[in-house]
Length: 202
Image (cartoon, rainbow, N blue to C red):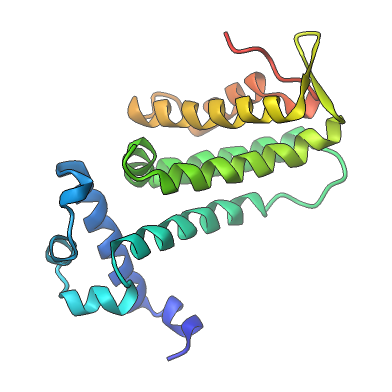
């Protein structure tokens, strides 16, 4: 069976989802170091051999899960039309879709982004956000205006990406008290890169 067809095989998709859900459930119950392939297989109602058909070991599973997370987010971001200037409505629409995706998979993101013992997910998402903000910040030139002051782009990017992800984590930890649309609008007020400015943190 080809790699492409195996990825789209409903049985494979279901098995991978069972493994992913089993791992997330276990991570909510026990320490990461205590999670084994046997525990995952038992929770997923599969055998060890089935697990090893898809992953070499748990680190390989984490790496592939992180890749899948980034692929899903990039697919949402790529929906935005190519543009030479930033369009606020388009960017807001994409941000809403991103937050809706996170809300739809809230257990996954809540568990893995909050886990300090599994940094690969936060690291991958941070890099993606840094790249995204960099592409927008570069349109502003060598510096960005912050409350009337000039701040080097790299510092503004570090601040913006960390604050953005931190906001998402707290939103999830507090059981998403705001809708994706409302939160997206607030993030635009906090990080208005379309205006080439970034506000100081309160």
